[in-house]
Length: 75
Image (tube, rainbow, N blue to C red; front, top):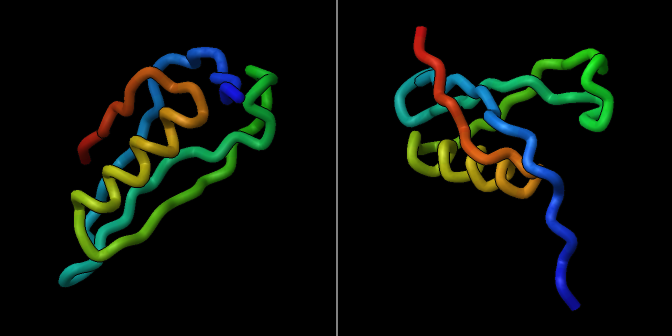
């Protein structure tokens, strides 16, 4: 059985921060209702022990949600 792919949603924006020695956090908006473009957004994040692991997790999540790319914002 084939898994239904979500519609492409464009770019997913995230920011990677080093919170301490060996602690990294990706920050991004979590949509309450991604089907409604007017839906309000809430902050969300993912924490891990390596920058590579955190970015891989966020990029996979974004792909599964139907985004075509992750744009990593810088301070």
